[in-house]
Length: 226
Ligand code: NI
Ligand code: MN
Image (cartoon, rainbow, N blue to C red; front, side):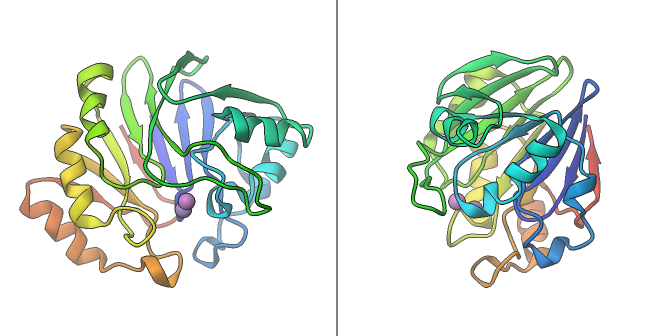
């Protein structure tokens, strides 16, 4: 599995010959100006919630690639009304796709579209392939629900957690989340994009290291291989 960081909370995951794009917010992110949305591949687009900084480029990319949108019922319906195709899910559900399973799990946040349309409840995803299990938290606060993931779904290889604070949990809560998730390997996201979420990256990495945990912060466009 190869996970490429596209800035903010946007990821491209290659698994079993399929490319899964997560929360594409690229074309208005100045930090990601070297990423060209017209060149991104996508067989699937996973969307955690309806906020603009998670759905900005969904329509353009799905139209060009024909990617299947995987999200909650409300978000999938919104994009189906624009002529795109989707697979609706909701919290607690699991579905087998050709690349592996998607488990939709709780997130503590909000979810409305930029135009005011109701976006259902925010979510996180656990991606389970034949060889790997990774958690994509989405925008969320720290919560006890995270303890259920290793207990019910299995042992995680990687937790992708927001660390920018203000709109989501920050570094201190993300360290606690990695305890709850029983996963020492973390990829941080949802930081530095705008003023409210700027962080000191070296300090963050050191805080994780003090607790014998590994915080990975990828330059935009770089990848992590599992
Ligand atoms: Ni949000
Ligand atoms: Mn966000």
